[in-house]
Amino acid sequence: MSPDPLAALEALLFASPEPLPRERLAALLPELSPEGLAAALEELRARYASPQSGLMLDEVAGGFRLATRPEVAEVVVRLAIVRPSRLSRPALETLAIIAYRQPITKAEVEAVRGVNIDGVLKTLGERGLIRILGRKRDPGRPMLYGTSAGFLEYFGFRDLSDLPTLAEIEALVASPHPRRTVEYDPVEEPGAGEAARGPGARPAASGPAPLPSAGPPEAGG
Image (tube, rainbow, N blue to C red; front, side):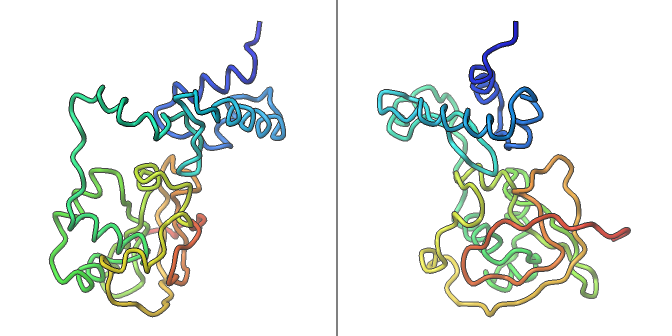
């Protein structure tokens, strides 16, 4: 006997260690039509909307997950034996620059911060918050960095349009930068969802931009 589709959806969201994109859910639940899946997600959202529920259906990083409600965070944190280390101020500053100016090279980030960022880039990469988008079409073909799906999940963003405005992080990136267009050869990230992929070229926005869509990688590079 097949399980109830709503129960199956709930179980998948509970068991998955990461947010499940709508496309992945559709593949895991072929018995549900796109409309049926949308309706099931809304039904789950409504079920967990009650203030008496300690869980909620969270849409983050281009996918869905079951998460604890913010109101019970101070209770849930009592379970933590080892707390993950927080990002340092230099790491947050570097991450903010990458998030708002991606795609961006290491040298360009260093020009803004005025210091070497080798160690910070290594930390952000190990934490899964940034990724290499490709190589800039400049002499030396420097690598271009951007944020990852892990960045969205870490901060609870659905996509880059959820980023605060630049005015709200003025303390981190003090001087305004003109709009620019960067041409580069993108690299495909295996297993990455649409929410984390980079473009072949796009103007850098002065405020939050939607997540870039994937572009075909060029051979070589």
